[in-house]
Length: 608
Ligand code: M6R
Image 1 (cartoon, rainbow, N blue to C red):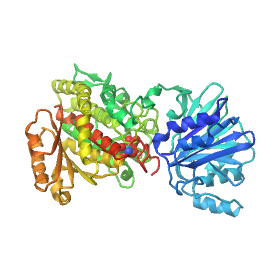
Image 2: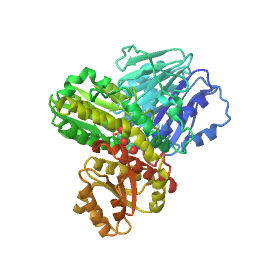
Image 3: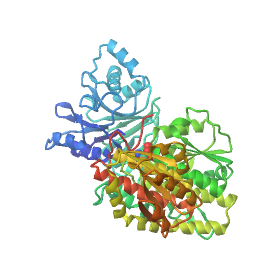
Image 4: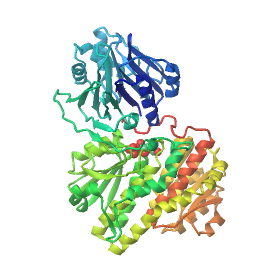
């Protein structure tokens, strides 16, 4: 969602801010802006639209400046336009700030401030905070931010500057990530490492309820209650080429294509072939709780929720452990039944999804240990959970999640195997499973090498207005994921269903305008899926089947068939999802859609 960058130091401030904003563009936004200290005081430049547009408007301006902040806004309160774009100021242009999150009590605060003479110019919740800080300021910016935030309800990642203090940026965090980058005679603050990683890899993570005073040579972390918080600087390993397109036309295509490597990275050093099990370092401290569980609850959103559904099949089949999969956004508004033998797993690519973080907080009230499955190292979810496993899939920039999905399944498969070996699986079975797992990257490679076949199918169906995706068993979540990918990036309406459910309603939609994508691999439900295909064909629907290599018969009863190599049935989603990712990608490109930054979507959803 919104992105923040702040910089203080000797470099060209405008250029650092613009580069930083470009690095966080992938998070999704609709306006962008910067504020800096120029020779004549605070300067603000902001507008609706892309960072490139903002860049054009400041191009060639050599403005000597000591510090600045920048922001990409994903509109919540007030339409996306130049006025509502961040940074925002109070009515005296004294305080300027950029904010991620939502100020829930802004209406009440605004009213009070109005009564004390403040005039507001935007529709945003954020502007209120600038006025509030200006109202309580008496010479100490950090102190004013602290005092103002005590009156604020809501969530924030906040960077603040003040016309009086050209050598200071103050940052504050509550439920919206901020990371500080420590340089030599310069410092950075951002909502996302990518914004400054080309300048420094030395970072400290701000925690909820903390404020920080950032100057070029010093950073002081405090709590809102004014207690100094000692911090350890961490060195992050992060390859800059991971956040660049590397010759691909889109990040999404790059990320789909790199799956043989990322799937391999997720298992690297973790498979113990001889013992037929896995070693997951991050689980060690809480292994007893994990292995002693009688039930598991998975919480997640979107694609991660689909991976969790695959995990449910894996855990139940391989370990005999009952699993419930919950939408993180619903979890805390129910009365989830959890006891000390229930383990909770939060699954998230970004590790910053607000709904998932809220579900973790709710779970923590009821169970001892919450486990995390995350991609972003050091993310809020990674730090809030008690133990867990990283995906090691590398930064995922495309808004549509692809490589994180397959890595999440790999991690869930490893966890299921680990648990299964303690409960019901023999070493020989474990060994066979690992053998199949090791083969997956190569098999994904063979699917990718046939991308043009999918491109051809995409060409034929790109103008259809609706799609249906059907699968059964462990491939039912893949049907959901295929449909989500298509609707996210091509704006075509698509639905995923368990194949047999079709006759309970969606069959009414089938006519010769409806393409139906079936995952029809040769597993325990194959024959049943063939019957479902016949039902669609009888109603003149167009069938695109994802089938098992060597299955010649299926070609006779569908319009198009795309073959994937055979594998262990429980690992088949790692293969069947790849053609569906490619289908969505090609359709979106052919329709001229913005694949990496689809309309209205954000990479990490940091609002409720
Ligand atoms: O970062 P997370 O995995 O927690 O994100 C969850 C969803 O917001 C995310 O998967 C979303 O559905 C993607 N746009 C899917 O492509």
